[in-house]
Length: 207
Image (cartoon, rainbow, N blue to C red; front, side, top):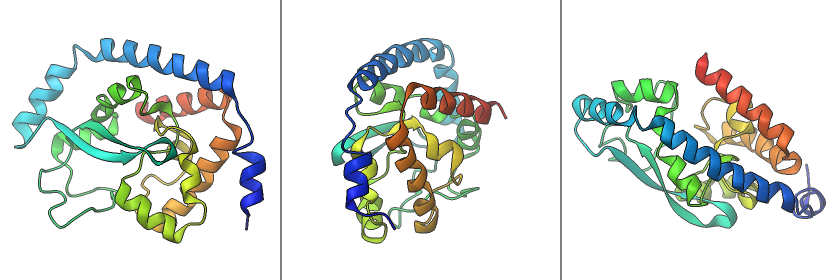
């Protein structure tokens, strides 16, 4: 029901320069600290992945970042190597393509540790919309008006849509629901909202 003028007034108009600079400094500091803390755990993760299934340790895949710029996102591999032999597929709840170790890593977000490097590079932020694949972006923008507006900010390791929306954006309908949370975050992003998302993420991981 909203039109272009809403985006011009609510999203593109605000600079939030001080917030963006401070957030970037926080991203750099936090990702360095987390990488140092995870160093003792990483060898065990690598060993578990190798004995659980054949294939590479890291899973690399192009994602769409801020302003539509593509980047190579990295994760610890949590799926079988032939997971997409028939082409790109939506993630599913209880996805049969996920390995046994992958299920454990996903529950506590350990598979996303390598994305801290993407954050250091400035391709991602700790908090923002979920980084989506180029194939799905091309499809979704045909069905969902203003879908590309979520690319006004850097994608995040976690975000408002991730903690408040459906568990998996595994369909156009679920993505339509999630984009409402993404637009809310872009319009209202602030230190207070970021702290709320961080606390909700910690609660989700612990539970």
